Amino acid sequence: MIELLRRFGGKFRRYMVIGPACKLIEVIFDLLTPLVIAQMIDQGIGAHDVDAVIRYGVVLAAMAVIGISFTLVCQKMAALTSQGMGTDIRGALYQHINKLSYAELDRFGTPSLITRITNDVNQVQLAVALGVRMLIRWPFLAVGSMCAALAIDLKLGVIFLICTPAIGLVFWVVMARCIPYYKQLQAKLDRIALICREGLSGARVVRAFVREDHERERFAQAADDQAHVAIAVGKLSSILNPVTFLVMNLGVCAILWVGGIQVNVGELTQGQVMAFVNYMTQTLTSIVYVANLVVVFTKASASASRINEVLNCEPSITDEGNQPVALPEPGAMVAAAPVSALSFDHASFSFGAGAANAVDDVTLELPLGKTLGIIGGTGSGKSTLVSLIPRLYDAGAGGVSVMGANVRTWPLDQLRHVVATVPQRASLVSGTIRSNLTWRDETATDEELWAALDMAQASEFVRNKPQGLDAPVEAGGKNFSGGQRQRLTIARALVGDPQILIMDDSASALDFKTDAALRHAIRERSTRGAAEGGLPLTTVIVSQRVSTVRDADIICVLDHGSVAGLGTHDELYATCQLYREICQSQLRREELEGQQGSAALASAPTAPASACAKEGC
Ligand SMILES: Nc1ncnc2c1ncn2[C@@H]1O[C@H](COP(=O)(O)OP(=O)(O)OP(=O)(O)O)[C@@H](O)[C@H]1O
Ligand SMILES: [Mg+2]
Image 1 (cartoon, protein in one colour):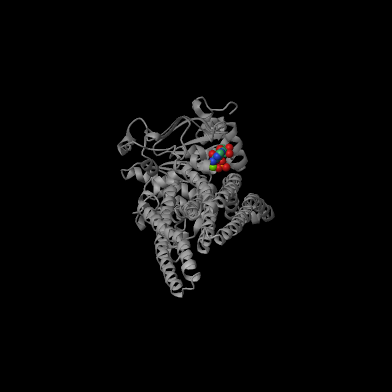
Image 2 (cartoon, helix red, strand yellow):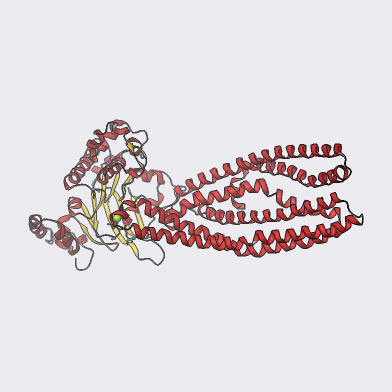
């Protein structure tokens, strides 16, 4: 909590001084009130002096008005500080989360990050507001009332000195047991958020598989879990009020008893006894409020440490000090040696210590303007391999280079501008088609957007919308079909002239004809780019379909993260058993028969030795 105050409180320091100062003035009036009432009783009511009663009544009213005015100022300061700090913390968290790499995001988990940015910030906000309003009030009132009471009469003070520690002890015992539960409550809340998110975002799938009951049960269990902890805390803290009021009222009885005797012998006045009762009630009530403050601050400190955990998490992928990388001259293309657009040098990656490598010792090189096809079974590491290129993850061992420079030496903005990725899960955000397409280049003209849509085979359905590029997109692109979403994400990647295009299974929802038209358009764009004096487009196509990758210049067959085969379609068909099996399971008989002849040619002694990396292929 202190760390958050240090980080975000500076701007609000003025409010944090003015607020409690105003509260202090209100507390002073609160402390004076019993004394004025005592005078009113002794000089007014006791002496049957109506004028004195009215006089002290006016004084009390004036004190109340002044007290309320200062309270209002304090409330405003508390609101400005807590809301301002809450907004700043939320903004900083959101900004920081956007800087984290996939590895850190995986570690925290999206639901937990959402709870931290919403519920945890709210807890801190509440504590700050209470802090400004009450942190001074209750302790000051407790101590002030105690001193004032002792100043009235030391004998009665003994009762005071017995009751106060008794209540303090009860609080200490109860709170010590409650605090661990508050920490657990936040974790339980994370779990509820996780289940809500999964259940609501996957509502269609849940219904399609008739899993509603299962999901309901899962949610009920998580909610029960949270409720159990909350009830346990509730039970513990429910002891507090009865015990406190019991001690308090016993104390009041004792004061009235002993005080009454003293009034009879003339040692004290009635007004003084009433003032004593008021001070005692004020002190003990203050202790109850202080304890409530402790609860709020305990919860807030658990929340603050969860917020700090995110804010202190250094992004593992940074580009500090990296200088812009010079792209190859278009003239380099005509040079004898091909320029490497992309290369993996014994690259490996695993999702955590002890986990098997998701990418295992991959070495390959793709010249500028060529197409790399990556094929392999589900979970073979295709997406992970391509995510190493724009540094969504960093290779744990080995290296990945783009345009001849290790990706770790690139400024991230430049790298991710040169490399455009179409992710496996097509995701759009609420807005318009235009706002979704201009992510990579906000200044893109309509002409450029239509060209990208044309290439992505998406222009037809966009043209059919009355608002065209300004047609609305709902959250997650829900108002588009799966195939339309995919085409829009492909178009988005093509805006802003990327030099390397990665399509991660991005054509899976396209029919074969559209898929072929898309690849043809990309190839055409690549050659046109080169002919117009620019760099040709280098493409990486990830797919489980042979038909999508068979025309690629190099095909990489992945198996459990490692390269099972590398070469052209014909070479691999002849030499890689895994690739042949994939082809046999997908291609029609005529296509395979046509294949036998070319395979024979490819397997002739001139075939490159690199064609198959796996034993038995
Ligand atoms: N965020 C993650 N955390 C932990 N393990 C992961 C994560 N993402 C992927 N994996 C694991 O890494 C391996 C490779 O996953 P990857 O997504 O790269 O496969 P893929 O070849 O793209 O599969 P698909 O064809 O289904 O898209 C899998 O075994 C998977 O379980
Ligand atoms: Mg994948």
